[in-house]
Amino acid sequence: MTQLPRAISPKLFLAPMEGVTDWAMRDLLTGLGGIDQCVTEFLRVTDNLHGDEIFYKNCPELLTGSKTRSGTPVFIQLLGGKPEPLAVNAVRAVELGALGVDLNFGCPAKTVNRHDGGASLLQYTDRLYTIVSTVRKAVPAATPVTAKIRLGFDDPNACLENAKAIEAAGADWLTVHCRTKTDGYKPPAYWEWIAKIKSVTKIKIVTNGEIWNLADFERCHESAATEDYMIGRGALRDPFIFNNIKKLFSDLEIKNSQHASFTTLKPLLPKFYEASSTYRNPEFAVARTKGWLKQLSFTASEFNEMFEQLKVITKPQEFETQLNRFQ
Ligand SMILES: Cc1cc2nc3c(=O)[nH]c(=O)nc-3n(C[C@H](O)[C@H](O)[C@H](O)COP(=O)(O)O)c2cc1C
Image 1 (spheres, protein in one colour):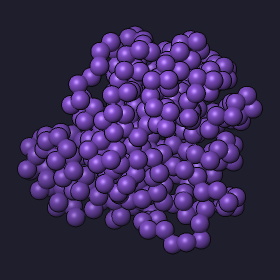
Image 2 (cartoon, protein in one colour):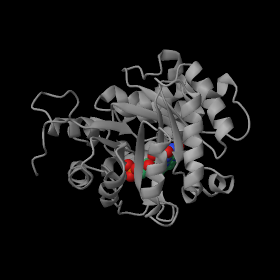
Image 3 (cartoon, protein in one colour):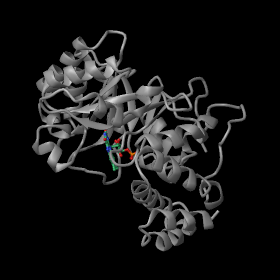
Image 4 (cartoon, protein in one colour):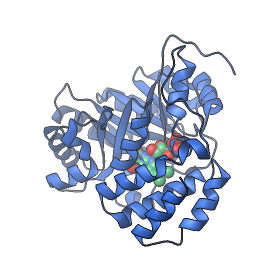
């Protein structure tokens, strides 16, 4: 493994993933350590101000200082195409205690794009500028306003002008998922675009996309050379990845810098089930635990067997009993 410069330990973000990284998953993953920052799943904004209950549902951490129980800060992510409603909702989020507001310009979902949100906005640099600057001006100066983009809608060159506009609009940092909307989630991620963005802006960049293991991280770090990185799907298959990345930069013993295996990961499942149950309800917990098990089946074949056995069970009590049998 190549030796990385040890001077600066990267700041590591857990990626927002709608339907996946809810309160329960953020709580579990940040509890293992190594994650410096979370962002909520996107909260769609159309014309109106959301009721407070919607903000609390999206980000229950608002009730705990906008930090997970292990102390990791959580920003609220908003998605929409209208500057004023986004600003009004951002201000309310901050009034309720949000530590920062992230703006989603990366979502590729057809329904979202059809309704003028997410990645479709990457085609309109001036609109990105107006949205970010309107939200930036509305939110107190001390509260970060950040943005998350893809390289472009279909043309990766768009990231250069878009990043410049987002910087000019006053965003505190910019997360770049290194693929276009058209690329979807198809590998590879084009980390080489980060250097090009850095050559035209000074904005702090968070590099994102296709970091599944330490070798990916090292290649990404060599290519992008940013201080900050965001990991999404890789964290579901190896929740220890954050600590293991941190370990590359430190000689100190790091808690939970474990290797992802059936033995190290299976004790997390009942905890996750319980947390999801508390967060919503047992039926929800069954569905979410199955979803995570499916991801874990890529990590160890034993999880695949477990998934095959548990996927047919719908009754929460039976599911929980069977889940515990594997411990
Ligand atoms: C199921 C799923 C849901 C996602 N939801 C969001 C979201 O709510 N907000 C957002 O900015 N990105 C969202 N993303 C994109 C991720 O944050 C991330 O940019 C992408 O997965 C690439 O990173 P990765 O290769 O580390 O997973 C989602 C991705 C997935 C797979």
